[in-house]
Image (cartoon, rainbow, N blue to C red; front, side, top):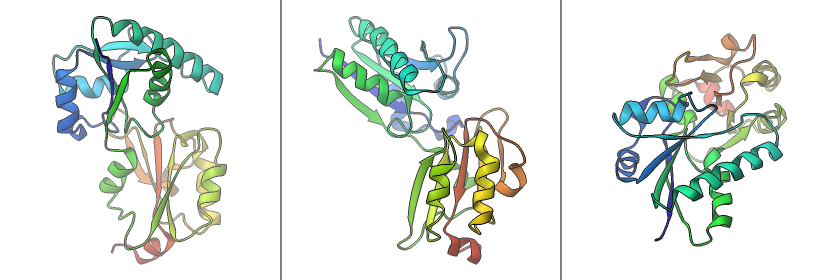
Length: 241
């Protein structure tokens, strides 16, 4: 029997941002799998799909959230081994993940390990709305126009990539996973003359959500699920457009 793994992006937090395609795939999957930090803890992606698709059965796979590539690889291998066993009875498995499954997602590492266990495995993905799109919409920020471009960086291990990206004033910048480095990112924005117009969203669509100017929320670190959006310098100066 052929096996199919489907990565399903569920968006940043608001269940109303789950796409119709995602709902259909979840309803027709033989098994739906969601990452969690403990067997009795409902993860954020699971919470979203339970609200959007009431009554859906969701099985949890445990992810260690400790930083470090070796830990992440070991966790992905363990989760892949569990899912590989499930294929015997449920050949079509959907794996739900925050945002989009192809951008900074736990899904990609698990899929990579499963392809080694099952070379014939079919892997597909359902795109999800990303946090920076939701944040830009809710903050009223036009992120790109005409021939402008965007750089998306991770600040998981530090603000250096964000600092480098900010050096191009014509480029919009999105910073993911940088909540604990927000004070340093705010300083870099100020040094680059780009603090005005920069917005940050924390836990979008989830309990504890905060949205506001970086200048107002950067006095202390925020959580892992914080996103910073910085429009091009020209757009900041022009205001709305």
